[in-house]
Length: 253
Ligand code: PGA
Image 1 (cartoon, rainbow, N blue to C red):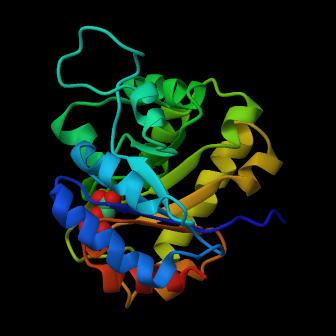
Image 2: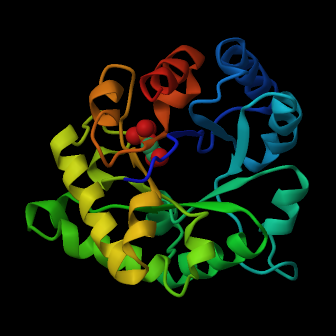
């Protein structure tokens, strides 16, 4: 059985000015600066990346972005490339979040291009997948998640797979206060490993880290994290408060 290091990432979405970002990171640092049992990653908006990068220098805390373009440079007004992120000591990038898919029309094909560009630049993609409530109600959860995993992660080498993190985020649980039960989440996480096994191989299926996301908070984190195939969390709302974020990270230890 592979041992997977838990990873907890805070997806701040469009929240926190630079000043607010520094204050939040300073609060988290007081408790977690030397945390080595869990990979802890802040994913602030682009405008706060540099400040957060400076704030985590010399600690065990890490930095991620929430999106990027797949091209290295060029006429793409409003976009940011992997190389620009790397220069800020960004090591992760969230790709294919359901909000990007829903509001900005990102398809699996687009996500796949971004994943490959991120990996080529030595950024670890946190690739989000998850079904809508109507999919779950219609018994289509596995079909939808499988299509997203296959499409978003198509054509990767074994070396590339080793740097991938997947976030299973049922869309109906995001920002709604409605969490998947630990059993519901575990079932999909285990299923995702069978998909990875068929795309790559069994040992990669056992070593890729799969986070749960969707209304994770200190009260439900311990039970979710104790599931055998859940390797941490992608935290939205609860990551905006230092105390609750720290408590979630502690639940992953
Ligand atoms: P939430 O968001 O924790 O606020 O539900 C999670 C996410 O969207 O990544």
